[in-house]
Image (tube, rainbow, N blue to C red; front, top):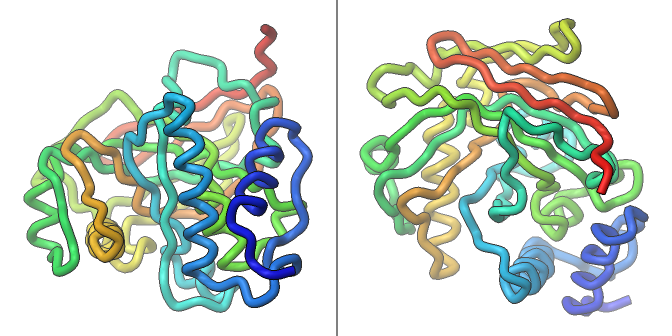
Length: 263
């Protein structure tokens, strides 16, 4: 079929509501390209905003060489983070709210100043970052069995699901985000390790890329917004009862606990 942005957005929104994933859009929509995929993503965001949601930041995906190679692309992608996606370390995250969740450890940033591209430099990003924070991103896919191409994940809000920010805060001047190492532990077993350089060589590069790509679309990153720049390890699937801890040297830890929440 030809591209029908409202229909594609409706199908993905229905997957959120029903928990029933859709077949890959790349196989359903003839000639679906990146611009069309972002149009589908933005149509969903508009629906969320109309329902009272608030954009609180963005995530950057496909920042590792391995993931770019897997999907046959040479660039990252981005998605929107709304207020309902944020979870605290003190709560049990309802596993039933997701279709096929995975977690990723990330060196997150909280901006103290806005960033408006194009032309944003690493120096401007460094000046805009107010806090560095240990983070766990919950990625999820409304596409069946994670059978995604670049256009599938973009249309699906860059496979966003949720996030947990640690309580620790550090100034950028006190953290070498390129050399910072971290580990991902699920139920007391370490399942992955990595360091900041896994994210485009420098996590700040992901923020610059995001600001510049959004700037081309007339959108700025706002002060107070959270930016998740990409994972330092491979993503790991989680299920009911799992406890996930990401530990970053010199930065601290962040914990996410998953369970079934009644009511």
